[in-house]
Length: 155
Image 1 (cartoon, rainbow, N blue to C red):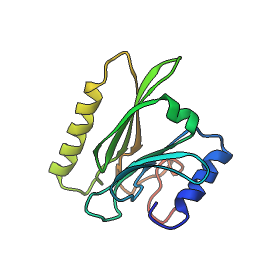
Image 2 (image 1 turned 180 degrees about the vertical axis):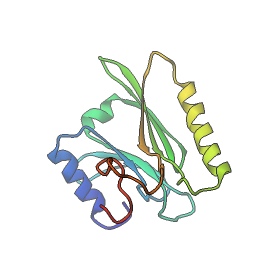
Image 3 (image 1 turned 90 degrees about the vertical axis):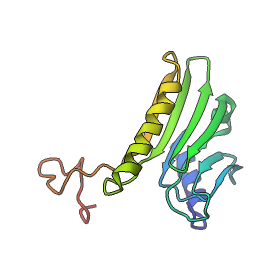
């Protein structure tokens, strides 16, 4: 989302499909912020604090969805928690971007422990949605499941 016009294009596409909430992982945003976009949608995001446009997660929502938003907080550049309240139910949404499988074991362990801790803090009566890119790599053999797991170059 750090290229000029990408966020606006994404906003237009989300409106075309009448999406109230859109989750963004590997958003490449810098810092932490909440902004109103050109067509009125709200964008909340968490990126790296060192100004590097890597990692990052976010959420784009309509003004209608924002009215149900009661809280949002950044866990760190790879985890964002948003809480919504509505007549039907209350829900907590985690937007995630996991370290790649080739990352150091300590880094991956720290990420998943933090994700589990946050999920564990949410009361059982609240609907939990965990969405994002979990960067799982299962190997090169995808025979028979090419539509589910694609190897590099087969996109």
